[in-house]
Structure formats: C-alpha cells, structure tokens
Length: 105
Image 1 (spheres, rainbow, N blue to C red):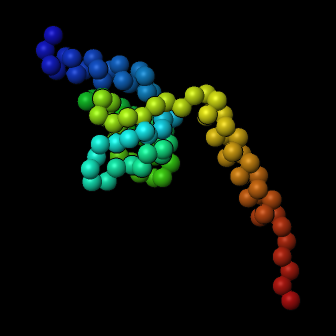
Image 2: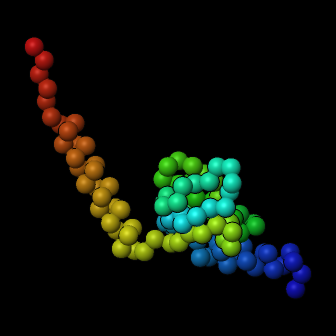
C-alpha cells in the first residue's frame, strides 16, 4: 500500500469516528502560535481529506485538530446531556429576566 492510500484510509476512519455533530474536548494542542486553550469544547463540522478534524470551538475558534499530533477526546453522552441541561437552565433564566417589568419614574 502506498503512502497516499494509507493516508486516505486513515482519513476515512477518522471521518467515521468523528462525524459532524460529534462533541470533543481539547486536552492539548501542539500549535506554537495560536493554540486553542486546553479544556475547550467544540462540535465537529467536518474531517478533511488529510484526516484533520475541523470543529467549531465553543470559544468561536475554528482551528483544526490533527489526530496523532494534538490530544483530544470525545465527550460522553452523559457530558453532552449535562451541557444541554445547563444550556436549558441558562435559557430559562434569561427568559425570566426578559419577562420582568421595570418601571421608571
């Protein structure tokens, strides 16, 4: 198998493991210039033909992660449910605040 075929197979495998919508958390990034901070979470948008995972990070960064170079993990279903629960609670609090009435004199 040539190098191109090996790389293609790795990219296809990565695409299956990290399909769009998969939530990940960065552990560390080797980018010396502008790494995404450790602990940042994001949602996979796509995996390119080289196997680079391109998420939309929760801090609005868009820097990709390279399997084997950068360290990251998938979030568990329990973690995703906890995130969703927290977001629902924040939305409920915001809605309650918006419904409050203020009278000025």
